[in-house]
Length: 273
Image: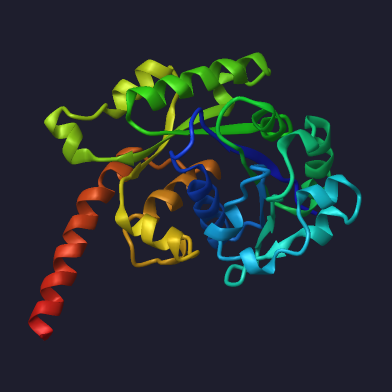
């Protein structure tokens, strides 16, 4: 029997990459042999099924489980490729007020014995949906970007999490859409700037990448493409969550490696032509 670690992915604002992170982290953990359940708590919007390419396979949603129509296990949808990844989808026709924090705790408790990791995709902001998502969690990943507005919003979320009883040890920062070239020019906040402002550890740095956008639009998490350098950043995060000691500098090398890889592929095609 599994004993799941329950992690919530959250942020202070929308558009910073929560759903993409949830999907790719879940797939990265699954590739390492873990059994993973992804829970979409963004009721009323639901994007996680689309990012995973499972939107046409949804029969039951979180609301059906909360209302007692089906069990949590019955509502799960299995990933097409990674058979140890399961999704509990959100309802697009419901509202966040139709689910309470106690409802979420009950649903997660039902899933808890069957998985190694349960990752909850939280809605943006600090309203009811946020509280629903964080209440059953043991650890928090706050995803932000190196922009002052995003950092300010993340700082506010940290204060709320501390009020909910989370310790600093159980809150980690994921820095998304990082551009080393802009940092070198002094046009973007450094990792040190972000850690100093938020007073929390950065557990992962994910470079800005068009490949992630393309994969997301296709409903295929980039982690499933083992040939891309950007997939390594999600794999590094998964390994760190499992206790492996991988220096954060490994993430910062990925952007430059990706550029080198692109150039090599370009000239290889040019020679063949």
